[in-house]
Image (cartoon, rainbow, N blue to C red; front, side, top):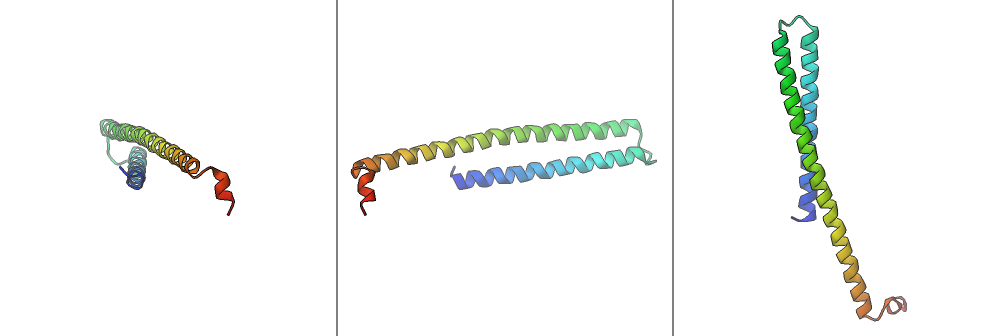
Length: 105
């Protein structure tokens, strides 16, 4: 996977997680609103709503943990690529005779 596509994937995943968190927050707000009103919802319906919210929250937590792992792998790959680039630069500088040659111009 290229760095660009990996970055795009991470960005999209974060946006999806953010949207899910917004949905959970809205569900919590609605449940609290219904609990404080005379909507006719009984305790069992409120409990079911809370269970659904908790399940969605757990799903989001798992997704964020996976994103953290992906992000770490992405950063590790970037660092590896930078190290390889620096090593290649050092080899090229050595082949042309050192940095002194580059500074003569």
